[in-house]
Image (tube, rainbow, N blue to C red):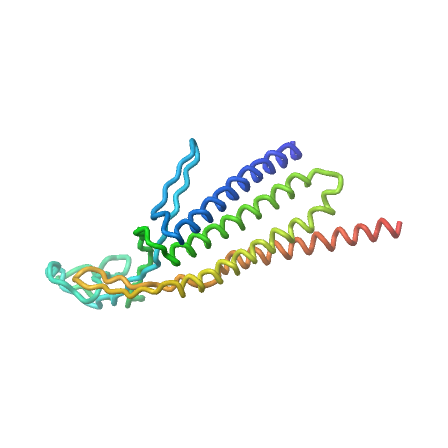
Length: 247
């Protein structure tokens, strides 16, 4: 039963890896066409049951101070701060015409982050092209990781499973770490392609570009953990081989 489950899991990983590889190639082609102005975003492609969407976005943020006091009856006039109040659980502070921040903690400022979806005009765009390449590389890393997982599951029930396990687990860890590093490097490069000026005005929330660069620490930590597990497998396999030689 365990062997059958491993084989089914391996086949599922293989299918997912091949689909991710196909998506990576498609997104890479979209990036090449976008660099020549042959494709406009957003892109929606469909082949039978398969559907691929590719979007280009710009990380943005909006921030404001939080009011420390406000009149409940004055809700129509604009305010330079956010009327968000924190009270004790008994709700004693939510009484009277004027609200105050009276809990043991008080909010001082708020920052909201998100993304602005962009539509391309058909002109050659280095930003659109590099964004597509970044997404394609990310999909390629996912595809490679799934294919390594397929080989790991496919060989887990074999007679030489222990000997195969260590290099495959280490390869999976290296892929996770490399993917995070490459994604961060591409994020820095894409930031150099943002040769735009920005303007925001009016009474509503004023958005400003946010810094979307940085390392995915969670993925780095996961890759390091998988790499460590692979090293433990290697040591166990080496120790077992030495014991057999000794006997």
